[in-house]
Length: 299
Length: 232
Picture 1 (cartoon, rainbow over the protein chains, first blue to last red):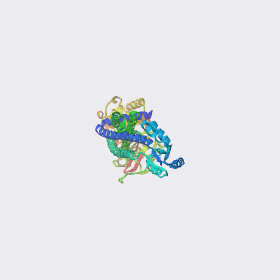
Picture 2: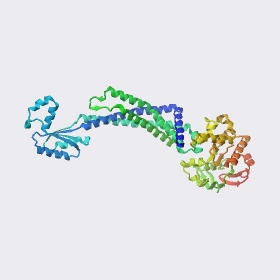
Picture 3: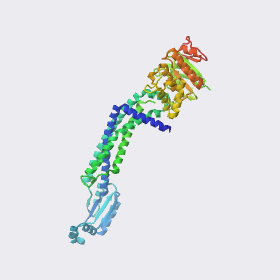
Picture 4: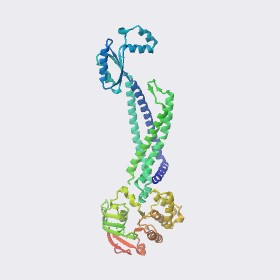
């Protein structure tokens, strides 16, 4: 009960003081707002990049074609070797005949064309389809497989996928750098706002100390004030990112450029983003104000 | 057992000035004590050490069984809750009414509203300001402001009331009013009162225990003492 009364008082004092030092509070709030808008963009971007890279990675397969004259025995030998490679998670094997049947099923054109080829004449090859555990090492794995006897061609989605992923990760890094710098500036501004509040209430704090208020009682209103600044600062970014992302998603029908890059469905994703933005705002406000309290409030 | 004991206390400030030299002192519970002396005699320093605004450089300061000198900064509030302090410049908050100023002390401790109301009105009655509850400090005379400060100091029923020159800004008539309020508190509530002053007239009229300090040394400590010019 007592704790709640004290907290109630602290929250009341915090709001009062935000209004009393309105101009400086506004400066801090705007700075938090700008920071959080960029945080929101960064979060949305990085979640989406992560989402579609994992989607792509799931589909990423190494396809291995064996020499035309490979016998069944030799194919088994190849299979054993592939099994031993540590990065291989699973694989399937299809003989020439199976490949042919599958292709014929898929298309009428193939059906008639392939009917002309039987047994040894078939231009098709025995194939393995290998999935890997670690996509980053797919290149090394592919190279290893290429060295196995009777393997003629190895293919995986090299090129485009690699470039896309590396482009997005570098964008991500730059955004995080900007966010970090902005958070530092914001914290600095909040420290100064709280410092002003502390000096405005110096006399009150002195009397509080004389009548036996604990350090906790004296400090809490200032820390809550910082959190309130963070709370106010996160309102606009939350609205912007929520409606902005929904509009963006609808405008592109959920895809970016090609069906390969799928956007995350807005619900419940935007709620998670809002929560992250709100949390970041409040935590940044809290860090700033506790810094000021530690520096300027010697209790 | 004495309520307050000072054992071999020495206080040297960082600028090299020594305010108190090897002071030994005992004050009984429920007593009314004047600490007298000229400027720079160390009486304010002595009061400050009692509420742990200053730490002694040497020795022990024991208040109600608590060694104040060893008290950590974080725990000072535990001592402050057991005592009330009155200053020469009142230290009231100008934007709060008389009632709110007194209530402020209890709000800081997280008291319930109903209890705050009861205690505040009781202590304002004790200092004779029940009819000025809704006034602001700047609407009151100096004597009335000091009585508000006393009400705030006693609102939490402290065992000890420290007064640092409480009549320093008041004329003799108002000063006597304040002294009557303090004497009643001492009598009715059994509060130990320690008051630093250099007001000769008050000390001689009240006939209480007088501790005389001179340049940081204890000169006299007499029950029913007087303000002795030659000692100062």
